[in-house]
Length: 142
Length: 140
Image 1 (cartoon, rainbow over the protein chains, first blue to last red):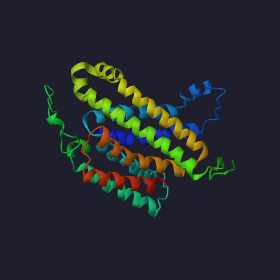
Image 2 (spheres, rainbow over the protein chains, first blue to last red):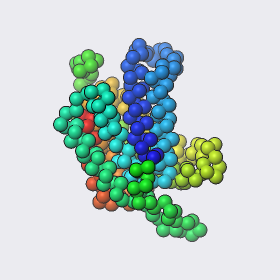
Image 3 (spheres, each protein chain N blue to C red):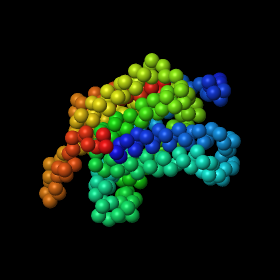
Image 4 (cartoon, rainbow over the protein chains, first blue to last red):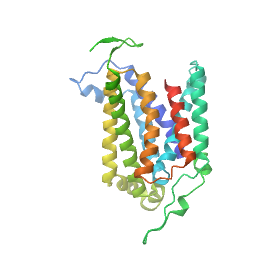
């Protein structure tokens, strides 16, 4: 569930920000206050809200899973955006991009078959977080 | 420095391959350092869901904001952001975005193995390389 939130909120937040900023007049460094005004643009505000959602989900995921598990799994967001662009915005997707989508999907499938957390032996009075070593299906598919 | 127009009609300066490599390299190094430091901070803090269950949302926020490692990581991500803006000012998005996103996946796997002692087995290497090529093809 957390990984799904990361994959959806991250790219969608970027897209909203990009759309909002592209529709604003050019902002000069001599008028930094106009950047503050940009926050009240509905697209930019939605983008920021989504990116806050992305970052909190990302931190939560890193607190229970390895970085080398979280990063490839969340790259699925690229696929999500490409498919959304194809079926919602009716943008054409080249053969090269379809190949990219297939490779990312296979890569995410690969990583999700393994454990999400590196087990470490208990040292001194620290207890090994054995319950964290989950076989990943339950984390990613939620 | 020569300039020409990008597909969007905006001026793009021509920089040499070494300068372009240095720009993308800075993005990749800053991003990898940021991700690894933040991952280390979150591992040190512990499972946020459990902290939230025992100390509430404010307790979880306090735990994250009280970690110096987290702030160093965020500083590197800020550096990564400004390096990206600088690179986009000189290079095309179609080069910078796929190159930095896909390279970061591989450098993160290497850094996570060395610094975080993560168990990067053959399965994770394969996934990192496949996703890396996939992101490049998709974003190029």
